[in-house]
Length: 188
Image 1: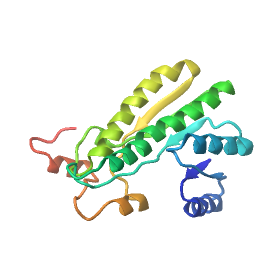
Image 2: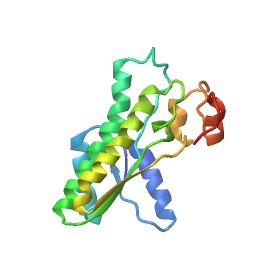
Image 3: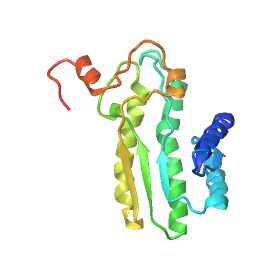
């Protein structure tokens, strides 16, 4: 199952995946909308059965300075990056439990869950909260034999990132850039 809000880009990616010999089931889904998520999983089940591996990779970032962010921008980031991941994971696990199967959820968090960067307050906060949510769900859903893990990549250049960011501020994309932006000795 391959999901996204934008159907044209979703279908293009599905064709690319299938041209390399893999199967892709494109499903338009808005992770901020529980009904959209429910219908997306229902469509996937009709095609491939119960989804047992979920990669929560939705995320948006704004580069607005913290003093200038309005409530709607803050909420949009939290709804996509945190609430969306929770809603999608919850739907997946409900279906795994109903099917009496085990599974795995991988939440794509960010190194910014631990580090700070200027002009990314809502993004960093949402990813730190997603990391804590991952820990909680891991404990809670282990009894159902469902693993919940996170990976914390550095900034990944993508069309979505490029659309949401400007040339300033520069967001570090490597550990050495994070270290050089900090005061004090380098640390991991």
